[in-house]
Length: 164
Length: 252
Image (cartoon, rainbow over all chains, first blue to last red; front, side, top):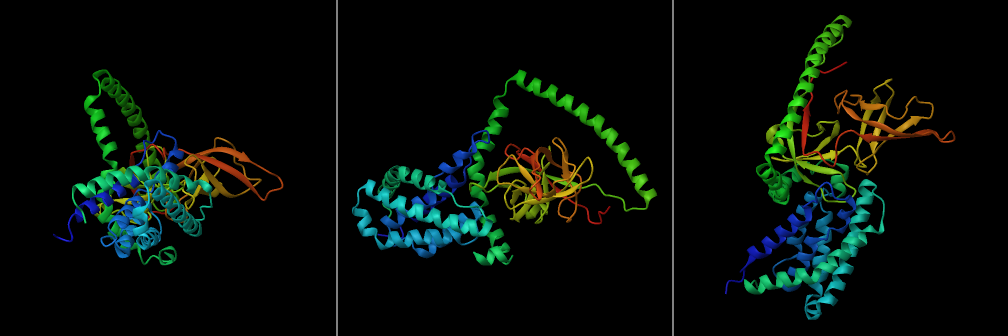
């Protein structure tokens, strides 16, 4: 069997995640809704590294992060470092993570995303004097709540197209 | 990261990556672009007629103003000639459409659909139909990124239209307010004053409206007065903006 099978699905899911990451709400809606935006890219990266650690590595996660930097107008390299960090930790424990129930996985997602949001906040504060806030827990929380859905959907596609 | 924050070495890298990723920005914006199209197709007849009437009224009003403007322009040029100062050339503008908003909370940046292929360059001023909007901070091949005047990193040299007091209007991080920096407590600024760009510093052309003074808090013990401005530009609503091409040789 072709070992590089189904790479398009991985790319497509990452592309969708990036589009979801920058879709904005209608201008008439209240601005604070922006705080609820889940970290789509991190969730999708988490899934693929956990399921197929040999397909998505540190370098590709870092390159992907450069793209996210552009979309978010962050300093180049910030999201690269964050995504590479997530990738490393998930890669280190992927065998254990696979055995977990979805709820346990979600709690790992929460801890990882809270840590990555904290890193982002510190760097943005150093770069642009944005200040610190507890608001960063909100995207981590919404992402955690979405994890079961993301997991089921991506797993369904992965099995359907036999991405290995 | 620090390389980018302290130098400009990575600007070309950003611009190439931005060009590669611009299709994603368009995809994310499709609901709104499509929504606009569909809205035009399914609009009712009466709605269109109303709109038409309203637009005709506005054209009439604006053409009256522009006639007057031409007159004043000539007069102004003659007077300037008499005074021996350099003639001021009109600015040219490029119409651009907003195609995306940077999602990071607390960052006020938008993406417009004109880039290096339309000769947009770094640092150009951007206005909408009501007033100053922001400035170009990143130019990609087909798109560019605009920093809004309310972003915490933004500041623009301004003057009070009524009496010419100069100051700097800094962004507050909130979409509906700017703050005048380092205003002495004795300065003659009152609520309702029009604040416009002063043209000092050379980045923004002179005379575009920035906002109206909303509140002035004078605390006698403080060294500076606190002046809040409400921007005239519709920073969170405008979909069409103008990129200003300032003619070289402008002076006053």
